[in-house]
Image (cartoon, rainbow, N blue to C red; front, side, top):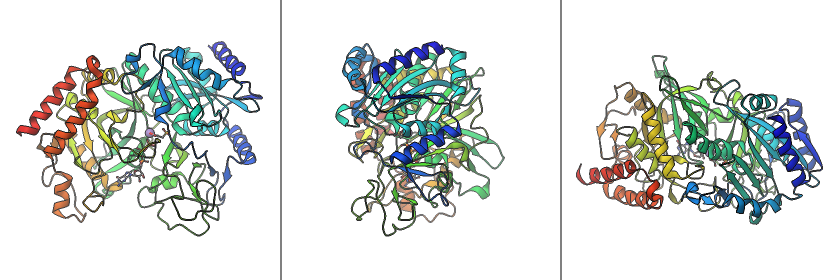
Length: 580
Ligand code: GTP
Ligand code: SPV
Ligand code: MN
């Protein structure tokens, strides 16, 4: 196995011609060396070490600040296997086109070879990858986001398997940027970007796109989901997985500080972005967090909205594209303090107060183990049992605060029809509603018709499939203000969800699903106008018919690959909207 790895690395050396090769061992000393290298070459700036020990700022190229979905490809032999949800090139065409961009790309640069493990040590569900990169920033981030070194080599030796990923910054030009996935040979090529999901290949490329393809073949699931444990007054802990599109609330929900703590409701963090889920011998769905850190959105994070994240990023954190105060502290819009004089913006220039000081997609990379709400079970090799799946998204109108699907098949339809307003996490327009099934549109490594089929099949293989819920924290009133306070108050919605799981929670049947009736949602202590509550649970039948049109338009191109069950649910939904 390791000779196979050596062979691939030698090939990459011949192709990219680095001036030095460094095999990463994942040690603290190695991380310190990476930081030192970057401080010297200016790609990291040291923040105030007395207030933020071990914290640094990286400013990426202004053309390289978010995932670039239009430059991301699934390269399968048959175009239909990638599906209408993906950009496609044949493997041969992709390699012919992109290989020249790797030729001598590392000349004068150090090549880092990073063996990494996705998932906890000792878990049968964890998987190894190797990323080759010419970016010290990527290597340092991989140290935080994954488990690097011998632990990964051991796994490769045991299983004879790893997912290779070749990455080069290239010249950072979007004209010569490609993020390529070869699911048939489980290979990743990424060139021309040093940012987040484009460059940290363990994350979206492996743990979602390649892993989703493997998961379908091997009957498990790789999903864009957070994982939390919710404790209720009895002391019992219920684990829930929740899918929200990029920059739409996963990290915040994963770190929720309950406003109902005095009633005994509390949340613990297992993961904030990705869930790998498996059916155990008893037919129970279980989830692990394949990551070891958080790559979270900075703007909007404050002591009021997410105190847990604020504490998590106090130390040992790499900030990317945030602003910096004159005294060397990180700053972003929504941090909770007014912008001080002399601020340096994310471009590294004195901020003249035009535009935002921090980039809207500025982020922090922090180790999960230093998160105050981290669950004692976050590295449980057996994973945690999942009792409910929640789909959420960012919609300023139409979608009520919460409802429950009638059953698994209906829930799969609810997830498949998910629409969300686009965010700054990917380049392109922001605030445009698009279909983003299961929050996986940018991340499903194969035809989504087959993906819906896989969801339906997985439900049949489980003894008690998790109940499925839909939430929306982002409804706005006519003046553009959020109707729901969100953040820590979202625990109220989870209190209702838990009561539904126990068979105790009241609900009314609506065309959408089961919704809390009057008095079923605990809003005690919140100052709410009745009409605001009415809006949070309003079912706009005409608006939903138009949404059903949008789903139809999205589903149609999948043709034969679209499961009949989804169309059946679609017709039943339309009919409920007309009649009930
Ligand atoms: P990715 O890391 O891109 O996958 O995003 P994410 O889903 O983890 O999103 P995150 O939790 O970082 O939230 C993104 C933005 O939504 C932040 O600016 C938050 O402040 C905001 N947000 C999160 N939860 C809520 C909420 O309950 N209400 C409102 N109004 N805003 C929220
Ligand atoms: C997302 O966009 O969903 C992220 C950030 O979690 S990135 O790693 O850049 O994909
Ligand atoms: Mn994400």
